[in-house]
Image: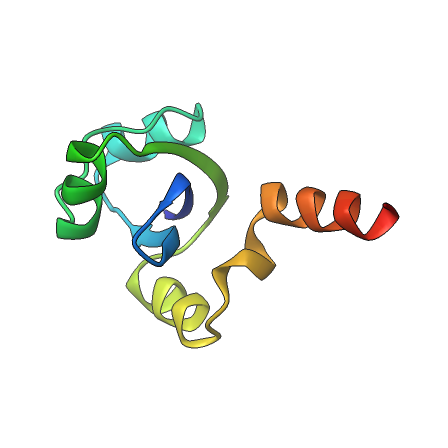
Length: 92
């Protein structure tokens, strides 16, 4: 499973994290919208700084799908929360 986490507030310059897992318990937690403990250095540092994470999107796939999404840059284009915020700003 590939997942996109939205970080609020942004940590340094990172607002999103795209990762992949093959662990069934982690995948199940992500599918429920829970954020399990993920040992990625960025997330560890962000968690220590008090940043909150939300699971905004998941995809079926593994490392290849994660690499495809990351290579496109601009994770905000895949983030439903950011899309809603951008639409609200445009309406003003």
